[in-house]
Length: 131
Image: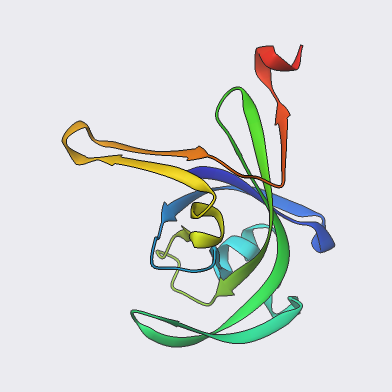
């Protein structure tokens, strides 16, 4: 799932591939993604201990804006993103802070994984609908 994440306090944003993680309560940004945005995650507002399959880890947290579009609308979500010092091959994780606002459709036989927004913080038309 491709989305754009913005860190408003740092005036920085990046387009990222997110892995859907229904086991994660929070959207997680790996340190390397923050660094690609020229942001030092150690400057994030908060720190807390997070727990997952691999055990516990300290997460840096920062207010963020996450944007997705379906070709007709851009959907915006204001979240607190967790940043994890994972190895560079660990992807950004799209957690239930977003997924609980979507209808997910998974059909393995057709190779389909789709998310349809049902709730959002803001939505604006794009493409032909914006005209």
